[in-house]
Image 1 (cartoon, one colour):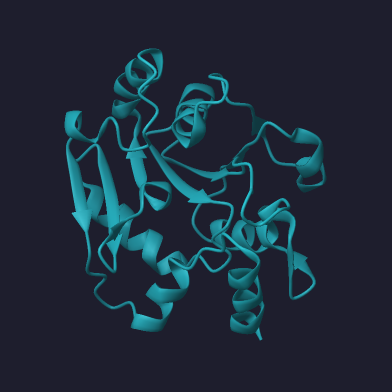
Image 2 (image 1 turned 90 degrees about the vertical axis):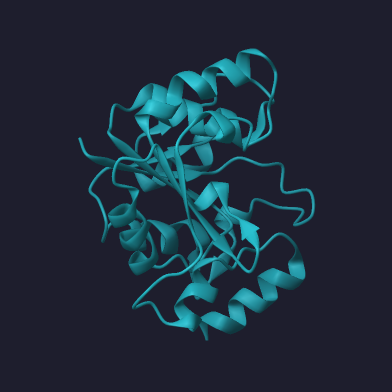
Length: 194
């Protein structure tokens, strides 16, 4: 398999106070909007979650973190450990407006690199990146050393950073990187969808 799309459904949602992935936008849970977009990019979509019951209705392969309480880095590791692919396209479950064109461009630019990581408005987005399987042993090494920073392995792999997205309009890019961490941003997301 060439590419596997991975939705990271972890996080304690302390600022939102409820499971962000299941919040409704336009009568559908956020996660369904995400999956709809990912289907345009690949047939292989998996969820990383420690709450399998919540997502059973989606009928997608689900995997737990193999390292307990280790944050999103454990989610990245779990996807690569359980599913054998060349590339993994990650999306956080609080990004309701991901755009296929942005991911397509990232996939096109990865070439010989181990990862392609987008930068938007000066912020690096490790949970909206593409990683190759070659990064797995380094990620595992970091987890075993309890270095849980999601970018802990960046210095040890060949990364291409992307901060320009040719042929993708500004509004599309802004929507792609919009994430909702609190009730105010959720309200904003509902307005964007209208």
